[in-house]
Amino acid sequence: GRPGRPGLVWMSAGVRPSPEESVRLSTTKNPVPKGQPYLVWKTFQYATRLRTGQLAAKAGYDTALLLDDEQNLLEASHANVFVRLADGWVTPPFDGGLLPGTVRQHLLEESPLRIREERIPYGLLGTAREVFVTNSNVGIVPVSVIDQFTYSIGTETQELSRWLIPDSAK
View (spheres, rainbow, N blue to C red):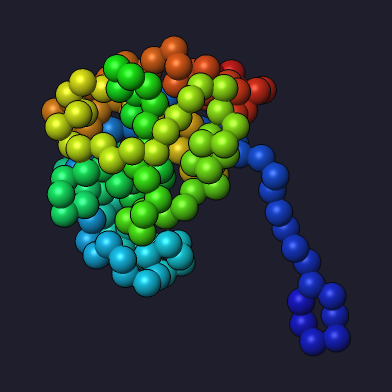
């Protein structure tokens, strides 16, 4: 708005179905140190995350998957990550190392499948059954490649995607 005139607020209440069938991720060290005071504010980290995604694209991937100093998964450049291990679904804990995604929180609180927060060492990617990333713009997007690891689009990822966006044709 302008002084003396009402403003306009434009909001959307639902996520759109993803235009991607799956994405390919390349791991890289998180360029933002853990505990940095503005880490959880998306607007302060946009350029840094954009750059990591661009570097991954230059290497032939869709975007980057950020790792902490101990080689634990954090998140993709602009999305949270979820991994299906033998004992269930996990996502990295919100401990000052990643953005607090709204879809991530919704999945943790309401998902029909149990999801727990847990550190995910890079080495466990070789045992993962399914992987997906999520954010409020695209919903759930399956991951088909992380570095040398490949994954199929699994039934649980599809189930969660249909649950999150019931009218999607996934």
